[in-house]
Length: 189
Image (tube, rainbow, N blue to C red):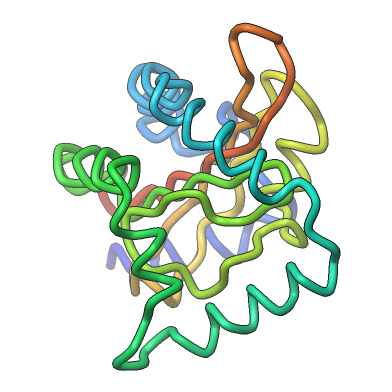
């Protein structure tokens, strides 16, 4: 019954949701929980450090890195993926997933190019810059938030909505990256 309700909800949504359009419990969670930690100093520091390292990459270099990441997904040898998942910031994100009582399925942080800075788990790709989660947050500016439609996520195998936010450096007021939090839709019904 719940899966049928979620499927009907997914089919009924024709456009991306804003927090106010999300199921009420999900919208409340976004406001009361997520907005309390998505601009944590660890996240800002991680993005700032990676921006310094990736700012000069060409589009071809970004595509090469994304292809290398995709090739590693599901492989025995994953040095690029491991370099992202083994950071203290990724551990911080995993802690938020673990402490969410099943509400959060995944979290990943992106730099100013849309490249993964940290992630709670393996993402299907390294470059998010060509996706709405990045384009409708980072490219919009400070305080931008985008809640995508609820759908079956291949990487987590759950019905989820992704809430994405622009991340702003509190010292400069400039948008430096973005964060996406996968929310288990079943936990909010």
